[in-house]
Image (cartoon, rainbow, N blue to C red; front, top):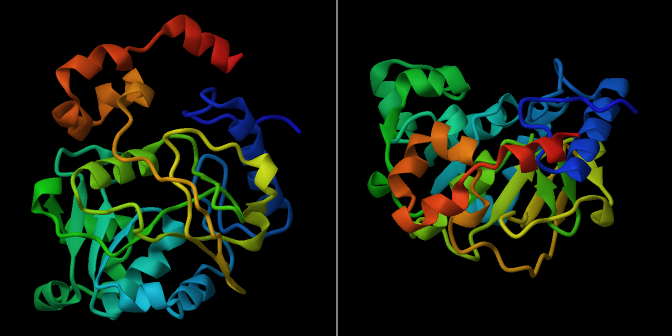
Length: 268
C-alpha cells in the first residue's frame, strides 16, 4: 500500500503507515465524506455518533466541553450548544495566542446566529470569543479528533500533534486533570488492534470511543501526561504556535531545537 504523505508525515513511520491504512479503508468502503487523507476524517454516521455520545453519563453531567475544530466533530459541537453547555473549540492549528474559542447558545442567540452556523469551524471562529488559558473555566469533558483508535485507549490524529499539545497545556494550566474523560467519535472502520497503534510518552489516551453504533469504554489505566512534555515539542511546532512560544520555559528551548539531519532520517 503506497504511503499517503501529508505535511506532518515522517515523525513516526509506524503511525504514518497506520493512518494510510485507515484513510484507504474509509475511502474504499465509502465510509468517508470527502477526501480523508491528511484530515481527521469526516465519516458517514457522525451525527449518529454524536447522538450516541449524548447517552453517555459523562457527557450528560458535563457543563463545559472542549472540542477539536474538525468537521467530523461538528455534530458534537452542535449538540453541546443545543444542550446549553459552554463550548471551547481549539483554534485551528493553534495559530492564536488566545488559542481557544468560547461559545454559548445564549450569546449566539443574542447575536442572531444559528447554532448550526456556529458549530462549524469557520462559524465558531467568526462568532465565538477568543480566550486564553487564563480566561477559561475547568473543563468537564474533552473531545478529540482521531484518525485511528484502539480499544485499549490508544489514539492518533493526523500527525500534527495539536491534540496532545492542547491537552498538555490544559493539564498544566489546571483546566483538566488526570481523570478528565477524553472522548472521540469515529467510524467503526477507524478502530484498529491495540498492538497496531504505538503510544508515545506524550500521547493522551482515550477514556471512551463512540461510533454510530456503540459506546466503548477503553478501561485504560495508563497515566496521562502531566503537562506539555517540552522535550518532545518539535522546533517547527514552537516556531508556528504562538501560545507555545509564550509558555515555553527558557531552559527548555534548547531541548526543542530542531535537528534537520535527524528529521531527514525520519522522513526516508
